[in-house]
Image (cartoon, rainbow, N blue to C red; front, side):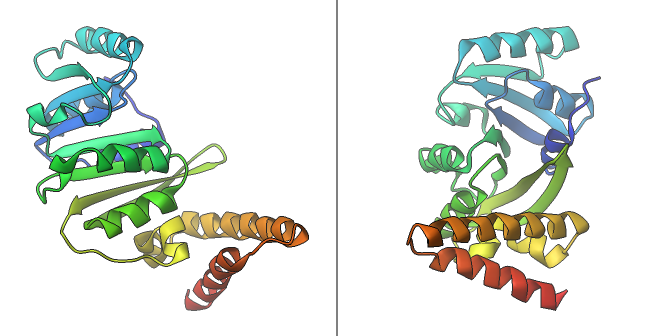
Length: 226
């Protein structure tokens, strides 16, 4: 049976039972294989824009004996994925700005029955702000650590309800802040250090630092609430 790293395990934990799961940018198809082998998903698809990852995915699927349960599709983003009528769509290992573009180009995901499970490698704030502005509600958020890196994983579905996050909520996740786990405290510590450095550099260059100061103020206020 396939085993996953912490980052992909967190994404897998947000897939609903009996899902039709699609893994976007699959590479080796480890995530779909994991979901089928453990009986989490009843059917899965593995997609990628490049031929190499699709061939690797096919090979691993054959080796696992799951050709009848997992299909592959070479496509750009979510283009063509709707043919599988997915219930759970997983997008991991990409920047938040790229994930935003992929979702923007796929209007079919504006369906309350579809769950998006997202793991941005960078720019989680851009992704969260996009989602809430477009009517997607984030329902679950997780933080996981691999080595020295903290990864954010969250699930959302279209609700039609738009909203707005504060700068810190967009960066760290509103639900993560509410949960207040030790890993969230570590993330806030790193954000504080990072934005303090940004303020120092921008101030020396005579640039505006209002946004960065707002983030630090939120972090400071959050400390008093826990």
